[in-house]
Image (tube, rainbow, N blue to C red; front, top):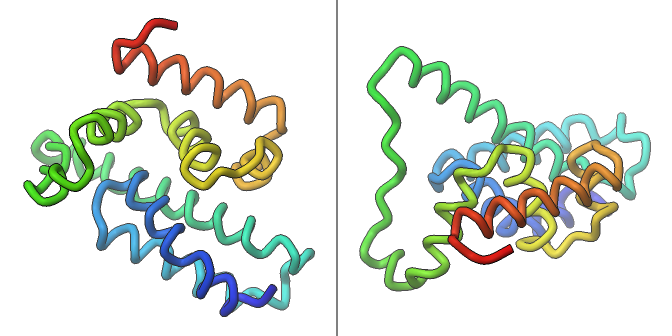
Length: 159
């Protein structure tokens, strides 16, 4: 699959992934655009062109991590971070329950948040999650399980 085909088919979903990780649309779009630009520039160096989508997903996650690291550095020097304010339109569209889940998801450790988003938002298999995050399948499964337990606790659900 070539980069243009991957872009056409997966761009919107990858922007949504980045949006969940970062919390703002502009940064999410920038991260995805950069991931596709780098993939396109280095397409001749891909060992397995069939795994280009996995590479792009990993690049998006790595880009999100970089943005979050830069934000953390800025925050150490500036005023405390205030989570993004949900607009009235967004809150009405998402519904209170979904909003609570997204807010609770944002409080999870980065690795758990990434694993849960890839597994349940993108409906990837455990192996695809592992490949995207560059971890073993067993680690992916245990990270997902720990993330679900933590999310349940954050939402006040019984284990």
